Length: 214
Image (tube, rainbow, N blue to C red):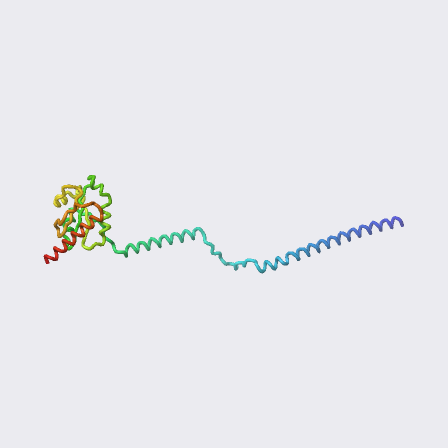
């Protein structure tokens, strides 16, 4: 009896230990399940409300790539060039402020009807010509738009024949021509304002003489 009782006690203890383990395991799983449901359930609802909408299957993202940027830049560049080209073609071509005269053009130009020519005669090596700087070019720009007055220049180093016929002996020399003939010689102060006043006065005198003849 003692042996049987001892065996029964051991079996009973073993059974209780196993039941205890099982109970603890079930409680553990129950706690985990409760914890996960309690935490994940609100997150799932949050995710449904605020989650970013996923693109439809097969939809392509339209992100710009470096290649697309390069193509766009080239397109804009070519478009700008085309616009400027069209503008340059459509705009009227203006005459140069100062016209270079040669042996082939001098006589015909200064004979132009109703046109006053104010011509500078110079040579590249002359110190006084060099000292003029951009005076003649600036004067030409100032006179742009004046009707029936043209500004010219002759390089006597290259056009010796022209300068000889025009009776040029010093440099620089400034002369007014009208109807193929010398009309006046400038000897005043060498600045734009003085040159402009001189040629305008001479043009008025020549116009008055022309009217008197008619």
